[in-house]
Each structure stands twice: as structure tokens, then as C-alpha cells.
Length: 224
Ligand code: SF4
Image (tube, rainbow, N blue to C red):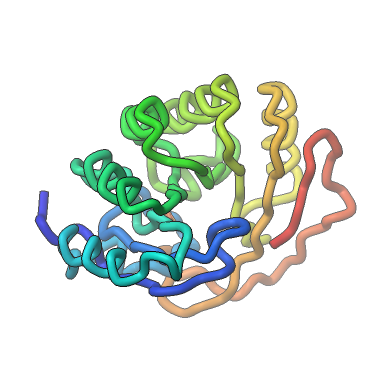
């Protein structure tokens, strides 16, 4: 694994860590290939920043920021993530992990070690549609992560990106039914796809619209 795992930093955000001023570390690499992903450079690119450089940046932000968002790409692919989280925590920052959930072992390690405070978990699509959207065959590992976080009563959110030509309201309703069945009690965030050129799947602007009024009840659905 490269010793420069971080592709880029967003020095300051008020939007990405609920109720906290935070910085975002974007980790290079991801095992998924979501059709609507606009982070091609991060997914396919090499990291540019070392862990030591990231920690020096944090040292310069003590007292100014409260949290660190580990995003990507998929930060959970980085082998040394637990040690990195330990270093961040020793500096007094809270940690949020953005993840697609297929690296169950890493999520388990971070949660058991109390090395992460909050998780945003992508529920990409219902099981039958997972591969079509992500080109990944590990829905069972995502499912294990979801069950584990629910069982642990860990503070986390579930979220799905909506491109209305790729995922239909019936499919989101299957996700809602699944979340109800698993007794998920948190908020289910739906985030609209924002068109950019050059997504991984070269998706075009949406031609159809998403019929919000047909969403099932059962979980708290919030649009971002
Ligand atoms: S949108 Fe998909 S491909 Fe892009 S970084 Fe997230 S999980 Fe990886």
C-alpha cells in the first residue's frame, strides 16, 4: 500500500459532518465503479499526501476544527486506517467515516476500537440491483455491515444517491422495506444526482423524474 494514501484535502466544511466544523481527507481508490460516481480521479488516481502530512495539517487546525471526515474513494481500503484514526483521536478530533460498507472487517475494527464516532453508510441499491449500479458483487458484506451497525446501536446514517433513470421509486421502496425489516431507526437520506460530465458510467442528465409521493413510510426519509 502506498505511503501517500490521501488524494486531497478539503480544509474546511460545515456540511459533511453533522453539527461539526470539519476537514475532509479524500482517500484514493475504491473497489466499486458506481455509474454516477463523479470522483473518477480519486477512484482511479494515486494518493498525493502522506499520513504524516495529514497529521501536520491537523496539528495546525487544533482549536479551529472539531472533526475529520474520512472519505474517498473508499477510506476503509487503507490498511493503516485504524492507526491513523488513533493519531487523529489523540489530537482531540472526532471522526466520521463515509463508506460503501463492503469492507466489513475494517468497519468492525474501527467501531470495536472506538476509533470512529459516526458513519455515513451508502445503500447503493436493493440487492438485485447492486451490481448494475456499482459493478461490485459484495452486497452480502454491505448487508453484514448494516446489520452490525444496527445491532451495535452505533450512530450512523444510511444514504442513497438518486439518479432517476438508474434507480426507480419501487427500488427505493424495497430499500425502505429492508430498513424497516432490519429495524433501522436512523434517518434515511436521499441525495439527488447532480449532473457532471465524465462520471464513471458516463451517465447523462436524468430524463425521467423521481416520484417522491410514491415513497413508502416506515423510516424517516430526508432529501439532502
Ligand atoms: S460513488 Fe461509488 S465508485 Fe465513487 S467513490 Fe463512492 S463507492 Fe466508490
